[in-house]
Length: 608
Image 1 (cartoon, rainbow, N blue to C red):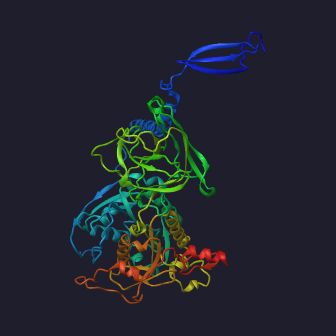
Image 2 (cartoon, rainbow, N blue to C red; image 1 turned 90 degrees about the vertical axis):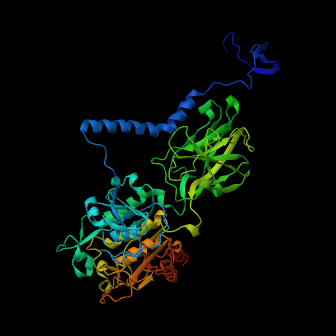
Image 3 (tube, rainbow, N blue to C red; image 1 turned 30 degrees about the vertical axis):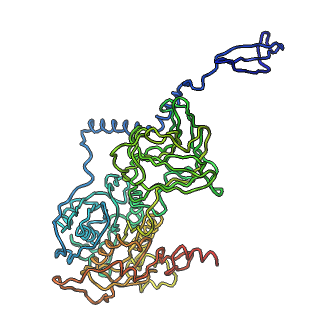
């Protein structure tokens, strides 16, 4: 130890008024006494400006990046002389109508449809797609037709009959090219009828109306035109599902915060933004039953007029459209305190937010569900009078807060300053009750997709598509893979597998089945009408079905246009068919699943 050192070997303190008496023992054994001014607990502490800057930068990084990119893009357009990007959504003319209509896709009868918002139709200029568009318009719906060729769409879709409220828009994109599927194309989309399919044509050629193709594949020697089956049936389906995002709903819910930390990044947003001293964090930790959780923890201080700690996700870009969901669900281990769930409808740093307070039970895992309707507008802890309800179509970020304050100057009755810990296994948007969920994604596939590799199949006795599956680039294999992509997505769906399609008018007697065994024919008009009707049938969620006419292939079906067949009660017909969710008719580990739901079959096979 150096000479003169005052290294302390012991210390004691006592308070004397606003001073503290410090008694210290030096290395030489002498006692020293010093009076210093005591820190006032109520005095304002220095502001941690560095932490404030870090917080602002963390939550505004994307905004800065987009602003810079916008400047770069704008400069590039000026230098190159290129104009602003063209509008991605184009409105099309339609003809007002009421009731049944006689026209080129006749006869048409309106199908009752309760779906609100826009209904997207892919493959809208094909034989099936344009019939679906026509029937939706006749039902008075807003339809957005996704096509590759706008000029062709104008030729085939302009002037279609339209019921009250109906509207037709066209967007140009190639499903096999994800970059062409821009977010603006899917604004306000609440359902989708997927009719896109790889183009098959006669090797000897066809006319502009594709008359040979419309007769059916059994009447010509086919080949794949344009894109491959993999690009259209599988890659295109994956791209479409990804572009639609959560707009159509997800049966398992949409994760906003996952226990393992995957997904959108979250970070602390504390009262340091107003000069406070609270510190919080979110980090991986122990969850329920040994599973992972993200733990929101920290220390809330009321010093410097503060009193809140929170964690918030970075802004979703683009904002999430959660209108298909009923509200927010949290699974967490409570600590007896009251928290706020906060939804922000825009990317503003300090704008209006929508709040709902919830209480937790100390030491218990609990599920908390908050309907969107229970969130109310707040600005800086004050309710916004006459504020509009939360718009579920624009959710930019989500936040969880522990605060001393409630709203309008009120205090949180279940608040405690100091350390806290809140393990969260998930935060997600949840769906309405099952009885209210209807298919939001209806896909037109094909009978026979599971047959090419099925044991016991006599290929020579199967329809041409099955016999020629390999020659057509694995067409049915990729159709089945596309179906599986739909099932795995979690979107409320129905998959329709029609038999051979014909140009015969609607009204044929029909037969529904599962297990992928039936053969025969069915008119495109009947399939289109079925697809539209399925959007309103709750019992059809998760169902894969085959459908054919009971009219023999060799017997033409004709109707009198002046006396068309009556409208069907599709819901009743589907209920009578006793269709089960989860049945695919696939072959798994060399065994045909038949009419058993696939999941049940796999479990039973594992037990043998």
